[in-house]
Length: 458
Image (cartoon, rainbow, N blue to C red; front, side):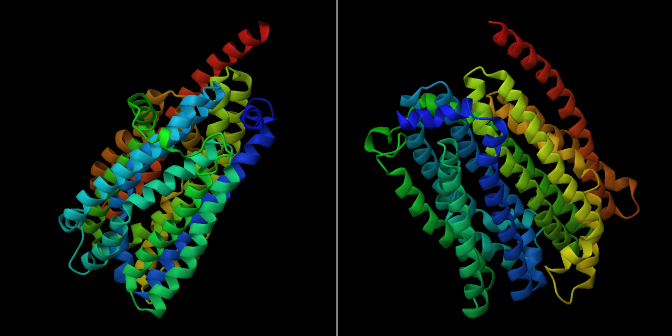
C-alpha cells in the first residue's frame, strides 16, 4: 500500500515541489558528472599533454555511438516504467526491470566487442593523425572493455529515478564522480598510466557504483526489485522500450554523425589544433546541455505519470516550469561562454597558446543562440516522456541531421577561414531548430489545454 501511494504522489503533489524533488537531484547528478568530464580533461591536458587532449577529442563520436544504444534502453525503459506506474500496471512495471538488465548486458557486450575490433580504422576515419591516434586508441580500448558495465550503470540509474528514488540516482552519480576524482590523479600522476589511467578510473568507479545499484534493486521490500521471475525476455516490453527510446538513440546517433563530420572538417581545415579546440569547447558546452538533460530527467517521470493518468492540466504545468528553468540555465551558459571563454578553455592546456586561442573563439561562436535551445531540448524530452516517439524523433533529427549536418558541409565554403565556417554552422542550426520546436510545442499545448478543459467539465 505504501509503495503504491508513493507512486500516486506523482499525480497529486504540487508540480513545483515534485519538479524540485525529481529535477534537483538529477541536475546535481548531471552537473557533478559534467564537472568530472571537465576535470578529467584537465587531468589529461595537464598530466599527459596537448596531444592527449587532441586525441581525446577524437573519441567523441565513439562515445556518442555507445551512448546512443545505452540511452535507447535506459531512457526508453524508464519512460515506459513511469507510464505503467501511472496506469497502476505494477505487474508490467516489475518485468521492465528484468528486461532492462538483459538488454543492457547483451547490447553492452556486443557493441563493445564490435567497436574494439575495428577501433583503429574507425579513429583514422574520424581524422586521427599519427600524433593523436595512440592516445585516442589507448583511451577507447579501456572504455570499450567496460562497455557492458557503463550500459548497466546508466540503465539502472534511469530506473531509480522512474521508481521514485531520484536521490538514490543522484548518490550513484555522485559516487561515480567522487571515485573518479580519487582514482584518476592516482592512475595518471602517481602510477604514470597516462590516458589509459583516466579511462581505467572511469570504468572502475562505475563498477563500484553498479554493485551498489544492484544491491538497491535486490531489496525485496521495494515494489520493483530483482528476482528470477522477471529475468526473461518479454518481446512486448523490449519493443515498446526501444520504440520510446528511439528519440535519445537518434539524438546520440546524430551527435555521433555530426561529431564525425566536425572532427574530419576540423582536421582537414585546421589540423590537430582545430580538432583539439573542438574537443575542449564540446566538453564545456556539454556541461550546460547536461544540466538541462538533468532537468529533463526530473520532468519525465512526472510528465509520463500524469499523461498516463490523463491529468493534462498537471502535464502542462510541468512542461511550463521545466521550459522556464531550462531557458535560465542555457542563458547562463551564453553569458559565461561569451564573456569568460578564454579563462574557461585555458584550464585544459598549458604552453599551447594557439590551442587556447582557437578554443576560445569557437566557444564564443557556439553559444550565440544558447538562450533558445533550453526550450528545444525540453520539448524533445517532453514528447518522449508521454510516448509521442515520432514527434520526439522528428525534433531530435531537426537540429543535428536536418539543419546542422548540411550546414557543416556547405557553410565552410562561404568563408575564407573555413574553420570559422565550421564553428558558425552550430549556432545557426540551434536557432533554426528552436523555432521549429516552439511551433510544434504550441500546437500540442493547445490540444492538451482543450483536453484538460473537457476532463474538468466531466
